Image (tube, rainbow, N blue to C red; front, side):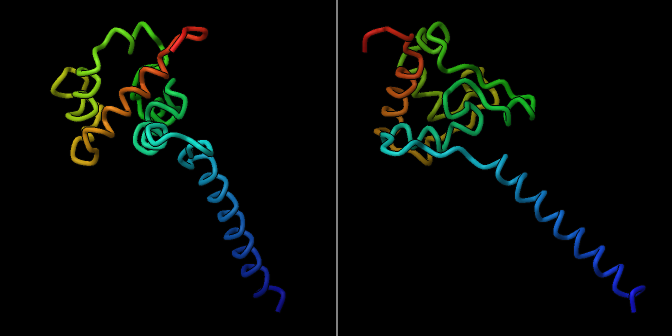
Amino acid sequence: MRRRLRPVLALALAIALLGVFAAGLAAVLDTPRPRPGASRAERLFVALCAECHGADGRGSWRATLFLIRPGDLTEPSRTGRESDQYLADVIRHGGAPLGRPGMPAFGAALKDEDIRELVTYLRELARAPGQSP
């Protein structure tokens, strides 16, 4: 009887350990969530952009893991030098038409108003600390 029970217990333990591992991995890979009271633009950013750009705009480890370098959106010298129209076009049409391959297009999923709000949010991310609005 013990000989039959031992493999069943080993299998049950292996399944339990696999479940714990999977739960831990899911917690680590979970998508960031917007903070409570976040603006619509911030919620859109977290939902659509944070996977590559990170919730704070500095890039995510997931993008790095897949050798994608989305750039630091908090760097004023990077985002600040681009026009609102350029940023809106990158969001709407993706990066490929503008020489930025890897950036997906969101024009089919977002209204023009949403894109304008995202551009404004990007400007807020790129604002240097201590700089007035």
